[in-house]
Image (cartoon, rainbow, N blue to C red):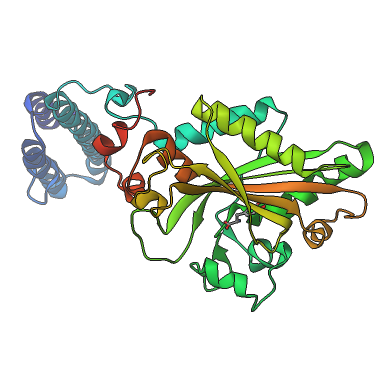
Length: 350
Ligand code: DAH
């Protein structure tokens, strides 16, 4: 390499070694590779060379040019990494794998009640099923013996999607799918259908201390040969006494639901006011907790089950109500408030 080229190279290497930031590097780039830069100058200096000299010298200069460009590119990456490191260090300690500070939260009262109910029913051989919140009209109404224009629909206005699907108004909307899922085991192997399916439900209604447009239910069904109302009463009583860990008063009244026959309302004594009457129980002393009944033959048929051979019961437990009773929550709207302070006061089992 010519002396001139070699001294340019050494000078470049030295300057590059001293560079600390991107701006300095850019200056060096212009100084060496720019139009008026040293390397361009070398190429220009060849104009009086012979053809042979031009060839040799040109090759050397081009190699030098590539070396300089390469070194600048590497330095650019190096500087970027340094800059990032500086930024990270200035952030102080930060452990991305550390868990969130859970000590500030608590399980939602409805989660706690749902788990308790699930455990009781699981211990009695029930399967726990999950189901979508968006369902079809058939699932939510038609398959449950509620045809179009049936007055029972008036009680359950909801939110409709443009494609005709809707946000489910009741966990009963999963019944049809559950029957279809388990009917082969029932018919072929004689295994009774026993399932619970908790879920979020929606209704288009004005909110007050005891109504919300979003709430939780837990549906349960049992279908087999010779299933009767006694079975229904046994399972409901067992479950409620486990959840409340004490004897609670209940009453059964006749109730109408198109998908059960006969249908009942299972009420429990209001635990907030002790039965004297308060806004939570609409001043009646009783809370409607669990409508239930014997599954209507049409509903079994829609699920592919022969009502001549099999019978069953169904219940729709108001889980939101149950949580309010259990934790003494006076206003249903607190449950959806999202306020950690307000929610954690109801429970100490985290
Ligand atoms: N799905 C009914 C509602 O939300 C509640 C219900 C009533 C469920 C009777 C049942 C039942 O399974 O047997 O109003």
